[in-house]
Amino acid sequence: MKKFLLILLLTLLSPSVSFADRIKDLVDVAGVRTNQLVGFGLVAGLSGTGDGNTFRVTGQSLSSLLSGLGVSVDGPVSEFDLGDSLISLATQFAQQPWQTDNVAAVLVTAEVPAFAKPGQRIDVNISTVGTAESLRGGNLVMTELRGIDGQVYALAQGSLTVTGVSVDAAGSSVEIGVPTSGRIPNGAILERLIETPFESADHFVLNVRDADFSTANAISTAINDRYGEGMATAIDAVSIAVRAPSEMSEKVGFLSDIELMEVDPGEPMARVVINSRTGTAVINRSVRVGAAAVSHGTLMVRIDAFNDVSQPGALADGETVEITNAEITIDEPRNEMVVLEPGVELQDIVDAVNQVGASPSALIAILEALKRAGSLKAQLVVI
Image (cartoon, rainbow, N blue to C red; front, side, top):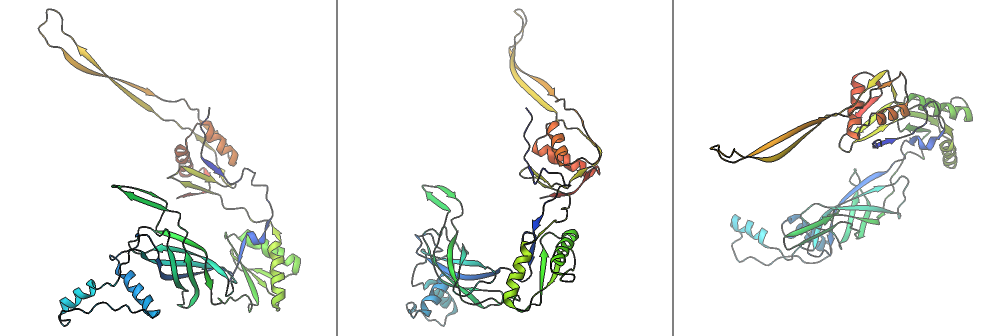
């Protein structure tokens, strides 16, 4: 029975057959994008798995938080002369009004979708930055989320959902997942509108996700055929500029009609992607192979050792000794060489590799050898 190959085929159809795709599946509208937010906060209510006193930022942040809420956080007055710098430094480290075993300092991140309005909720991710062991059972205290411009755009708060578990007892520990990171679905409320150029733009720019001159030309041609010559202009292999209506209500309907239009995209670049760690090879439908002969074979060397006893003759003056003998055999499978004709397609490559009985790791070696020999008409990407 032939060995199975871990080959993920993007498609088994002939590259001569093409399918129409919606424009919305091929492009992104410039300016219609998500925005990232980040904040620093505290998670309280942990069961002794917080930062403790080893991460002083947690204590400082908690002091600032309570001070802002009108809670006095002054420590006891030292009986020593604070003029002494060493004693003063020791006092700063020694004065700790509370324990922070149940509190952890965290970073909070979120992504704001395009056109999100104030009052809408977004998901947030929480990760520890100190020595906390787990965030399970914690509650995020109100945290400001800021953009790259330093402005506050959202406020996050709520109970964490943590899937990771860490158990430590009697010198043994078991950890499943990552207990130091969590998530709060709908945990932040947007407080400020993020402006976009969509309303004031006199042109829409459609950016093709996979740069290709043929695809950009097909999109611009399809738009011009429906709305008239000059409505769309292909700027380069990525961008297509489309004239936008003047009224906002018309812009939404106009762009919706364009996104639902179907075009025949250009053929993708012939590419073979190889993951050497997992032994996975991905071959797209545009891959061709020139004339080549493929042969794959491995030598298996087997050494069997066995013990024996050398016994002297009855009248011989000798001693009985132990002897170790070894038997060496070499096995070489008989794999026939497969000849690839010029211009063979994807299915032919897969059949040929299966015929020589190649394993996933051997498949990678064969593809690399074909590329080095100049027979593989594709870009070889190793990740």
